[in-house]
Image 1 (cartoon, rainbow, N blue to C red):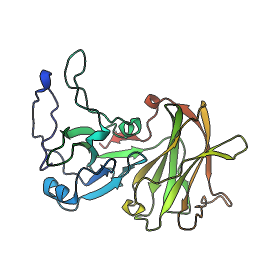
Image 2: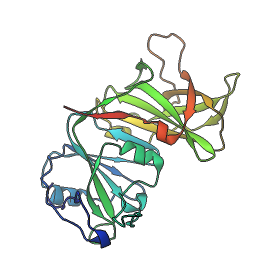
Image 3: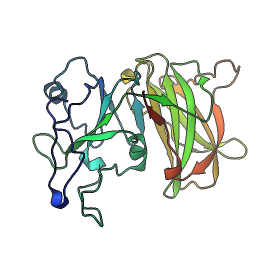
Length: 277
């Protein structure tokens, strides 16, 4: 990876570091979180990555995550350091603690990545870190793919306890991208009669950024929602006319209703990532 010294595999007590310039596979893509700001400009990426043809995507990581489509190809996630833990010693060794995301949603998505560069303070560039994602394939369990009359297919969902509320993470496969028509993904909590009691629709990136084969994780947040399970409706609709995407092969169906058990964050993995062999 040109332009950045990779993070060491070992660090010494007192903050001294063993620095290695470890050759890394040339990434095919770079995903940047836009909150509080994307840390790298286009010029920074071109100058420091030292390669052409790199696919770049910006995503609001408070709402969503993306696994770019050619999942056998390695890539990089770039996060502003405000999203990460500050450097600090871990007890009892006093060695530096691992750098982790402050938001459990982001930390779950980073499972399987490797911290390859960290700049914890502002300098010529804002404070940020790079996480390498090795070549992998993305597998999703739970439910079978549900095709919709639109450019995405539904892959599954998990419900996770989050403070005094519940987060639901829906997973989608892009069937045809980029998508030039704006749309939103549905997230509704339903009561026993099927009426919506809470809504959290959204899309955490530009539809123009999507490419065929991408896996998208959308986060639907429901504060002050409790229970051991949740009745949840999802689907999608176009924003220009609010028309829902029908479920393919099910006449009259314009939504997917699931009963989801609510688990602890440590028990749930929104997308299971397995290194490509």
